[in-house]
Image (cartoon, rainbow, N blue to C red; front, side, top):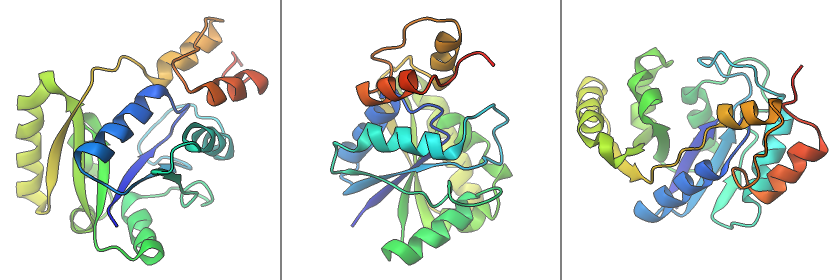
Length: 199
């Protein structure tokens, strides 16, 4: 069984996340994509809503796709959750030797900050997603990091998706419509619970 790991704050999850997950699933011939909403992200200084709410939005977004599953391995933890700790725990749950870790270019560039980064490269093959226009810089980065840490990293081209969670939050705060930027069930959940309104 080949598991793709897709972690993120998902604040909120949006259509772009699902497109990326589906592209990686098909291009890498993975069996499942495991969505892991973060609890308290160690390296992101953003105003995020409670983990339980973000978890529920991800659950709603992916529940109709049998290839997408969700884990509460980070949202149920108190304090910071680091990738090394998460992957180690997941190994004991799914009994696989290696995961396929989906990561954006910017996060992969900053991977030197991660806890036990050498060990993370042993536990996972990195699937670095970026737009095709950025192919040269992405390949250069992959070569640099794999030479430094060992392990495997692969470049996955994704469609040019101009959707971001921060833009969705901004639109909501300004009273603008955001339908079709998120799945319908997530849209209804956000509206029903008055999420991301100006505080």
